[in-house]
Length: 485
Image 1 (cartoon, rainbow, N blue to C red):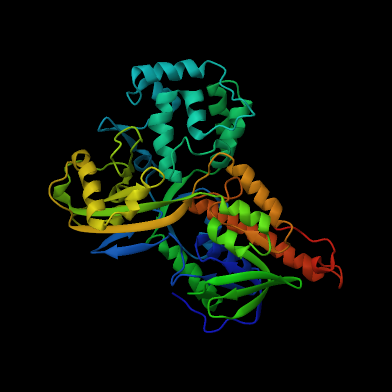
Image 2: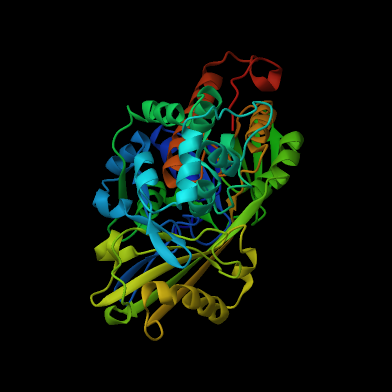
């Protein structure tokens, strides 16, 4: 990836971390006329976004697709002259859950849950009962996603739909995740609405003004987005540059990195994980550092299995399926995506690729298994569902260690405390995936939107400081605009 021969002695903004958040931040600030330096400890930028070609098939080694739903993401694509490849909505909405070894299609509505066979008769009766009763929570007891789902829709609904759904999105079990941190809008309606019907209607009302969502990728894969931003930033990116220390210096910051050089920056933005963020702010925001150190993270693995088309007996018509925790205690598979069904251009002619997700908080040891053992375990669990004959033609295993923050109970309050702590250090901002909604979030859309938000705050902060009369800045004890997490 791109390397700068030598960093200048100073810049307006130092961005730490070259994942999608840091890249979009650097890009937005550079477009605003700021002198930016982006530090990435690894040899490539893009974080978990990575696309590779294998024998004519396109493999997404990180995020598989993006739900095109934010104006910031659409604006970014337009500015970079990238044309999204969207998928037929009907096909992408055909999603399944494995229950008792068989795949059951997830109904698209509340009436569908009551009339289809997705839930058992007992589960449907429980759902019907809860729809008609007062299901409001105790405001003093923050609910998990599983508790909210059970209380509003029934235990079977929570086990078979909420549980696998949240594992697919957040890499953690629903009973580990705080409803407020993961889905603040749903949590807010849960507190307000007496009945489940009112809850569903309230959520729909809030979503009504939003544009239609479209599932998309890019020609050449999502890494095309990373490459295009990196081209725009050019020599502003320093790869293989591990930041060793950040200190306040005068009215700005002193950033020391791995080759022994130091850089003076007017502002610093951290776009790295919570543990690395904790280390870097230990000198300048010790309270935030302590809170950051307590954020739990999980890892995820992606196993691609490519077969000759005739080896797979099941017609793969839909997005894929998820596996509940109750399905099989020894099953390392969290879920499966059918890439060729969603984006036909991703598959080489005559082949079928099955993308298997493993790890998360359910199976953390899966990432420590050797490739042969991991692939064998995955193949054993998906063989009967897909009616597979023989062995795969190609195999690719990717491990993303400590890549997903776990939004545990208390996480939203922790993030508010971190934001309060770093607001006492003018010019410092954070934008990692560990920052939960409504500002942050785990998905690519969330990361782009949050990067826009933080870039605007940094631009405003530096603009205010440049217009401030001499002797009135934060370094002189005067007022300053805070830049929040």
